[in-house]
Length: 290
Image (cartoon, rainbow, N blue to C red; front, side, top):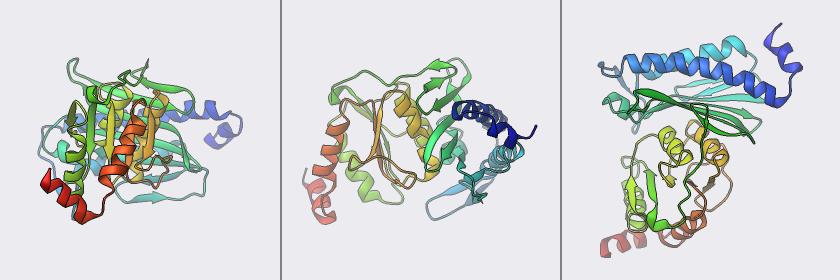
């Protein structure tokens, strides 16, 4: 029986479970080659003024895309490294074959693979694969979220932290310093004194997973693309909250987000409204005088 005929006889939850098997197979194969080449010299190519791509990004993408196309050739695919396949399906796979390329280039552990599935315009399934997520035990971490059914890390239910005071929280900052140094500096300067600590992992895949598993409490990110937003579902299904900088729901076209464990989310939005959204000259002046 073909996959299309199988789809015709299944509920949406059954379909998601079926698609999960495909996605897991794809990322485990891709993750294996990324781990094998982790300490090797990579071939680096310039993708844009602010972005690079390596031969391993492309190899990982080829494995994931070919695996998905093998089982569900009728689905749309949007992948970071210039792959866009439009079959006019209600289902679209969103893929980042290597998120955290700069870290991977330098053999740093903070990188991952994102694979999400949209139904129309909403994520119904998200998967993030961190090949070195659990370094103490030498193993990978596999985060899987299904709409309305929770977030799981290596088959164990994952939840956001229970911290309630902003001053106790850890912030993960994701802002392109090379693209917009003034904006990145402003965000850091505004938030660093209001939270307990600030970290910059350099991978949206890792950052969303850390919020969803309670390792950090707040994430503020700019210049995100659809492939980076796969992890939003992890946070939401783990009991957290994700909005844009104005407190609005996130869409596939949102570029700036706040993700949190929930209790201080509105407070972060208020801080951004009050101190970050100041006309550029005033904001720079404020930074120079404080």
